[in-house]
Length: 140
Image (cartoon, rainbow, N blue to C red; front, top):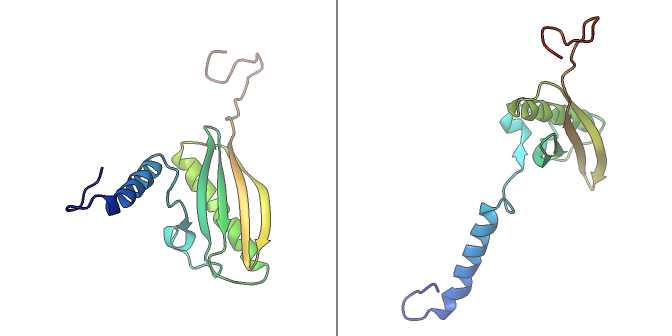
């Protein structure tokens, strides 16, 4: 039990709340995963995209990009897709992937904010075969 002076009762709940938040944070349930695209990639896009990367499994991850500042017109869509492709490429490289695909799974307006969600999937490298179906430069 947490104690503060002679009266432990008022601090029991705050101490329990702190322990609970710390446990959730340590497990990754509470985290600040949203990042500023303009800040991280030294850009000045008018839509001020924010992004988050969500792990799905060892061969794919999700990229969520949304407007951080109101802007109208088709340029905001172009900027969000540009941000998503750049973030996807950077994260794929960080994971050591040479080949990958970015596929749109959701593109919607949420009030003034445009939201773009894509899944990045690792692709296996293409293996070239010679005339005898033996991989070039190696054993079958």
